[in-house]
Image (tube, rainbow, N blue to C red; front, side):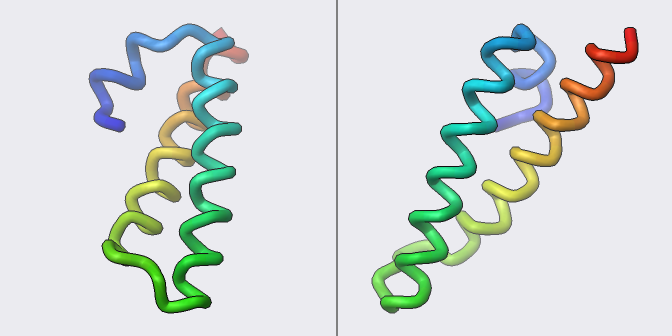
Amino acid sequence: MKKKEIKKLTKAQAIKNIDQMKKDLFNLRFQKINSQITNPAKIKQTKKSIARLKTLLRGKLNA
């Protein structure tokens, strides 16, 4: 997800997206072990998106 898209999300949407991305990350890691992954860079992108969403939530909780 891009930064602009993340800023527009509500708290509930951000939590939902984090859960979905964690499931995706698990599946990507599983594919990597089995040598079935087509785009290994997707793992890094997913991790960064999760971190951005968590940062957004932290900011919204403190505000």
